[in-house]
Image 1: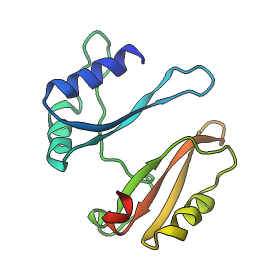
Image 2: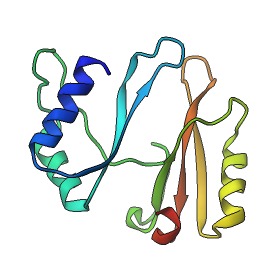
Image 3: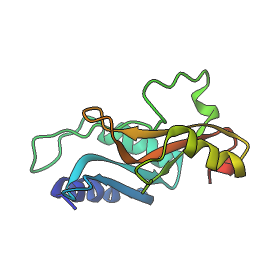
Length: 142
């Protein structure tokens, strides 16, 4: 883990929030942090607490600020009611996986799937090996 990764996770843990899952996104060639990740909290209140208390704060020992936000399938996603969808992170995707392939796999088992997005590198256009699946039913996302 990169030093800023440790700083961030330690800071969150010191706030007495219970973390269920932490995923630091790494460059597949170098193994270094890409500078972002995902955290699943034990409750919405814990996530809200972290957003309110740490977003925009300076990290100790580095000249960077925490930039925190709610996870979403894509920044261009236009949903009328953002509270009605439930999104999961899907990692370690094979190189050729597309949005429709990811959606089809999950929809075959969970009819409430509303969409899927495989994240691509903006510079190269190549998939980064992870994505998101949106569900209408929270129980399908758990």
